[in-house]
Image (cartoon, rainbow, N blue to C red; front, side, top):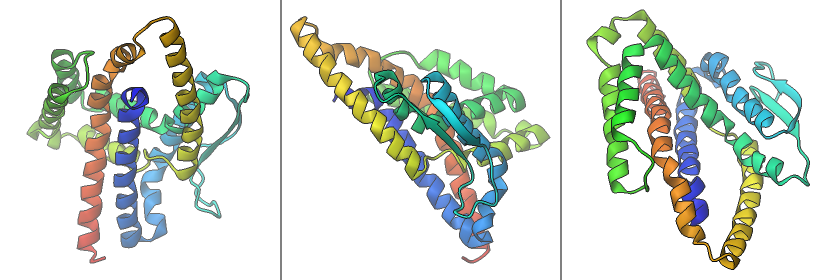
Length: 259
């Protein structure tokens, strides 16, 4: 349960984004062929790989090879980050989890930065809603309602008449769709994250043993630590919104082309 409270939201967001991306890409591949996905790869893939790369640096992994974008790979791999780590270091083992999920962080961060630069009115409305409605608190129905209100306000501030006639808004939409089309984790990413998750679980077990000996309520402590999930949901909601837009665009294109 402690593992679910600490990382469950992040993992759920990863699977949700992955499911929408895979379905969108499948529709685009039917409409335009396998190379149809490359239209968004120019922006999305480098940001995806930079997420892995940044987490490698944070957790002290040795980076061996990096390819932010390759368009002519025989196996269709658009990019990769090869890294090594010290198997005797728990910190670096835990790092595998966050390295695997790196594209979620880089994708969400890039969407927020893009909004800040290209659609500043929507960014200001979003940050105002965050300050007014989101706080560090236990994840429950009221928090989910608050996050929903924040994301609804974001949509209202994004899709205004003023924005719809602004070139920078449409530039942001293109960038956001490109990022959302490549934010999901590949199977190697998931396997790498699973290795780190195993280490995190073992450390949690050891932490609970130590807490029992010291007469500390470890469950209550973890619940307090997991209160960051309210902010995580609010910010990851941006990626979910644009992944949903990408999915709707893919469905529309697929139906127009009759595939």
